[in-house]
Length: 112
Image (cartoon, rainbow, N blue to C red; front, side, top):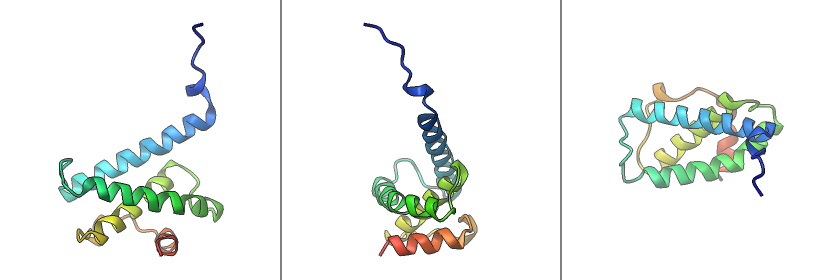
């Protein structure tokens, strides 16, 4: 009854793991630059709001050719996280933001 686990060998699973890994690294770097503690009371709600926004924007961004790999997906997620933080009263200085007007515009459209 022991069958080998082939789930991790699936190319689409491996691609998604790279995307999520890039998102985790980018998020950790941003929060460290901002001095946000992992114990920050608002962090969970920021992440949840960012996830909802990211999930709404990602398919549209991919269809428009704005997101084609892990780094671009991580940039989209960071911009969604920054929007969530700002809406909760924790704005992020522009110098700490990834610059991508097209992704910012798209997030504005799906966030309405």
